[in-house]
Image 1 (cartoon, rainbow, N blue to C red):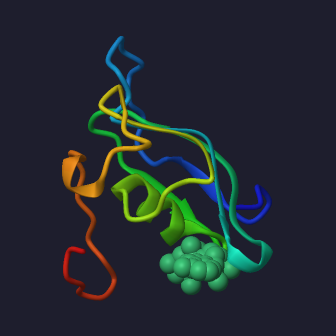
Image 2 (image 1 turned 180 degrees about the horizontal axis):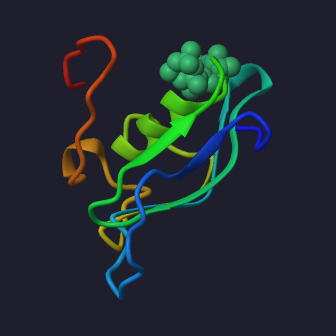
Length: 108
Ligand SMILES: Nc1ncnc2c1ncn2[C@@H]1O[C@H](COP(=O)(O)OP(=O)(O)OP(=O)(O)O)[C@@H](O)[C@H]1O
Ligand SMILES: [Mg+2]
């Protein structure tokens, strides 16, 4: 995700505590076949109770980021943590996270 096409940030001020972030992406990259780089290098931290929005034009990688957090896509590089645990290699059904899709879909 090119950094000049995405605005990501906290909508709500959350006091910095000593809690683990609920969602953490570290250097997450996703390449599809044919040389498509959907997400270049995403770093983000979402605290417990924080409302977090990702804004960007069509094709900038928003859905791909959500699919990697859910476990429906495997990152090409980087680390995804949920509740402090590294879930990068963990299948979707073993992740404590839910996704509301734009269009209804069956869980794979
Ligand atoms: N399964 C796939 N195979 C190949 N390319 C893909 C795949 N999924 C997404 N892409 C490509 O990755 C890039 C990012 O797509 P993505 O759907 O994540 O964007 P988006 O920000 O969610 O767009 P929109 O606002 O239209 O929903 C696009 O170039 C898209 O064509
Ligand atoms: Mg999308």
